[in-house]
Length: 129
Image (tube, rainbow, N blue to C red; front, side, top):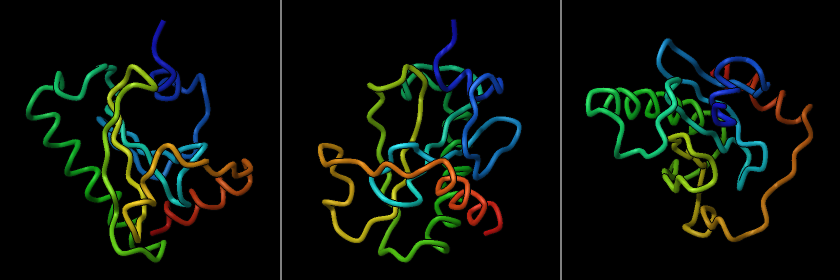
């Protein structure tokens, strides 16, 4: 049985995609810290980011960079924060979060609970960026 993210890649579970190519998928976090909070994953299931083969990891960062630019162009912020925690889902993923201050990336804070309609709207804006 694959991870939650593998089920998203296969289409068994829906997501709000913001970018995709043959190797990677970027989609909105359903309980974001801030509007535009996006997850980037490789389509192949690899649990731990430091187990990702070097070339693929490099490509993942380049893909993440292009997604981060779309987020920054869409949501006013000082930076796009990048974090890898890797404990919630056993599938490598990078969090891209629009931030103005360090506390905007505080995962112990209460997260947002946007509706599916709000997530769809945010995704559609990012897809057009």
